[in-house]
Length: 346
Image (cartoon, rainbow, N blue to C red; front, side):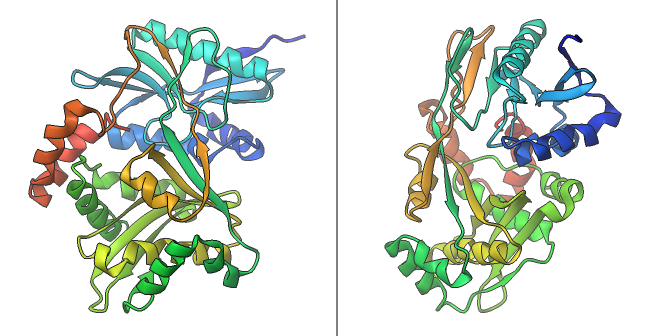
């Protein structure tokens, strides 16, 4: 009987990796091998994709990236810039061996910590500690498109109806550039460094029809809100979304997410995954108004060099002054400087 072999993924095995992810019930969009190209080419982080093999058959996968910065530390993460990660395997034994291999790799690389962004709860054993501070929001889309609005919480329904009176229009033709510009302005206003524009174009180039932009225009045909979404299996995942200053009064973000539900329904999707938010943050409260199911995320961390769990959250008090300064930066400057910092904040 052949023993379990854990090794690095090779260049010509991406299709084998993706076939396993596609067929596994816990395989998510963020486990796909395309992220290897996206994160390496956009952010320059080194990948360490681990593959478990038995009798020449794939029985588990674990995507990992190494982030190294003098300012933000040295970490091995599954997977940065993604909501979900961690090992996907045929059984718990294989999963645990993959996790042990990740920890050993972290020790060899002398990182501060190793992080696994598990979607489902897994008992913390050995070096792994729970680091759960995020919640995802999800809902099933009704079979009948006419029932989508009534499935939304009453107060949020009223906001959507308000938005529908504001002469807003939508366009889901591929437009990563406009989508990025609106997103960049939105996150600058929140005091957060923005990613490189290359991220949006690379996501579209890598994932094709699985990656789609949606832009909302006002009555003067000026873009006011946008979102870049992923489609995978039976779900739509709105991921990088935001709005200009005018979006608040126009309720164009609310209009946008409701329209995305309609589009996803037309594409045959049955599940709407609103992504993660830091517990008790502004985005957490906004998503809660929609009345979706809340799912605490069960991330785990194994400390290597570090003595304490990492906290790169904007809610960390030591970042408050930085956020206030960043909010006042000219938009063009924030787009130039932001990518130098955000590449370590995934």
